[in-house]
Image (cartoon, rainbow, N blue to C red; front, side, top):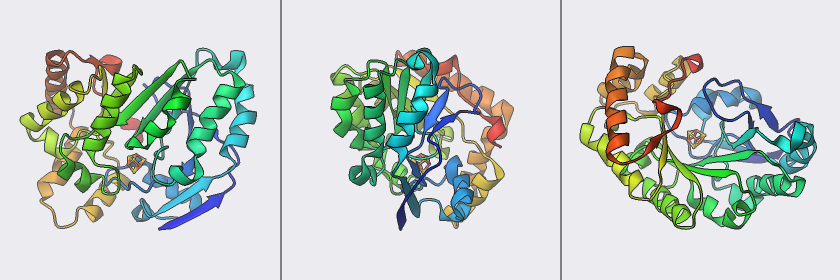
Length: 285
Ligand code: SF4
């Protein structure tokens, strides 16, 4: 694994994504050790001389991230009131290296010290975020999200090979709910095992509802060319129907069929569907 410290030029990035409810993102690392086979962020390698296929094998820590954020946050008018910052969109803010560098934690401390008045969204696949509960308590407008793509560890280990198993993420979601935090579960991308199996799809919603979590965001795979190429390499030798199911997210008729299933499960388990629909980002393709 290639890990090193780097100096970033900036840290608070205005989002170019459509249909999202945050305005800025903070990515304290380049690369992500979790190496999910479907990750759209694998294109980030181009900024550090890495190939798409290297994704998951390098993580660079932006060690000056807290100092940069302390400067850049002052540019937001009204101390950020009415704005939202997401940690993170092209890396996982609580991957293993965070235990050493604590860059996510330090950036959150910067927001607290500054008196930031906007929203903070956290999105991770790691229960490491539980170590920052003390910090979260000082950010009244924080929403804590765990990505849950399956209810079975054998599936999460397969598609998200170095990420904590989904059982530990569900446990973290339960802990955060018990402690009264505003949480959400990000059910995305919808993986072939749930798209091809109605029972598995229901199991996913049921598992999330059992944690006490109320809000879910659901997203289809961004089946862009570079993503599918990496999928084919990562899943070489597996049943071709898995790749085909991944690509079916591009098919509008299939999405209409899955949308209905998602909406009925949301209703059945008393959940709230973020944005009112399953997300699809064709611009990523
Ligand atoms: S955790 Fe997120 S950023 Fe990391 S590899 Fe998986 S999808 Fe990509």
